[in-house]
Amino acid sequence: MTKRTKALLAAAVALPMALGGVGTAYATHYQDRALPGSTLAGTSVSGLARADLVTAIRDRADAVTVEVTAGDSQRTASLADLGYGVDAEATADAVLAANGSWSSYATSLYSERDLPAVVTSDDAVVAEVATRLVEDADRVGRDAAVRLSEDEDSFTVRKAVPGFTVDPATFQDAVRAAAASLSSTSTVVEFVERDPAVTTADARKVAKAANAMVGRSVVVSDGSEDHEADAATKASWVTVPLTDGVPGMPTVDAKAVTAWVDGLADEAHRDPSDGLRNVSPSGDVLSVVTEAVDGRSVNNAEGVTEAVVAAMGGGRKYAGSFEYDVAEGGYTDRTVAVGAENLAYPAAPGEKWVDVNLSNYTITGYVGADVVQGPIKMVDGAPDTPTVTGVYRVYHKTPMMTMRGQNADGSDYETEDVPWVSFFHRGYALHGAYWRDSFGYSGSHGCINLPVEVAKWFYDFAPIGTPVASHH
Image (tube, rainbow, N blue to C red; front, side, top):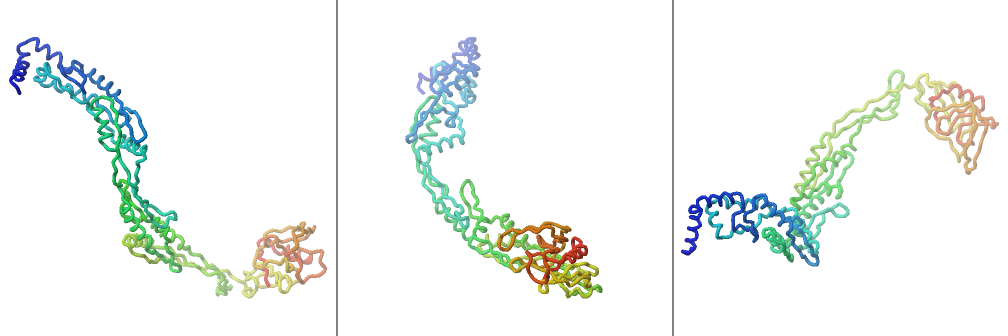
């Protein structure tokens, strides 16, 4: 410091003391105003009260624009558009901070104090603008990625493409400088190459590990059949975790495996079902009509799931089996009349039923094992329109009707006033055939044709629900 400067400083410090009341008035006037010599980004703000200072700062900041050129594109934007701003309150506080020091009152009389604006930024908006600049300049790169193949049965790699980002000195630094100086500017954005966050080599390493998991066989046996998970199923179990977009080593999704194992367990599950036995009146088993089937429920699905997850995660194949809780099936016994066990229908004692013997062309009425009518000759279906075989039940009856249908050659037929009709299966029925003079052969459209008086007897004998056994 020169002697002259020291002298001036001493004079300035002594001035308020020498001026007495004048100095006090000076200090009082500027205690809440910008001191003389105060400039903000090169512009004087001396004497402005805080509220006026804040307003002035905001007006100047709002007027700042930046002309940004990137590649072939050019745009003029405000600070806010580019993610930057000026904190007017904080800037005003910085200007008025000197008011807290008595020496500042003295030095402000012969010197200037220039301050920059206090700059703020929104990192998300800045990053978004930078990304858009890269896109507009066609300088976008791409990280490598791991994803499922088109067939969803393996993992493939999308290669990385080198990309660029904006040079901070030509964008962020330039905009921040404009905000700090509260002055419009222009900048030509330059780009610098950046390494991809995920390289092709990184992605290949992850894909290789994932495909190794998919390549391990997984087989679960239900005791009678082996169920092997196909590649697409196993691939759906493999998860490639991402941390900030970077793929990590693959893991096995236990929930997905659970769904597959539980699906197999549901298929393997079987409810118990009772069988049917024919028994004599004394309770002796005569025959088993249908076998009883034991039920079963898988009791180790959770353990199988855990073992599959552990095996795949450890790079091993898996082969395991379901274990079951068993529920035994029982039998329903049906009492059969003595002697009926050898007939076409094993009737219960006292049960009415109709025997249609297609080999002998006869119809017979039974109660239990006892014949109550017949055997009587009848006409069954012709070779081209045969009568059905099996045990059926009368489901509809009408004393007279017109029958319509098709002949074997496709032509239509119609027969009026067919009497004493007892339907036992779809369009098959027992009925009177007044148009026939003889019986004991095959020749109908499939129905059992009977002499009218015989049809009337069976009509009266067999209520709805009566079994009709048609057999050779």
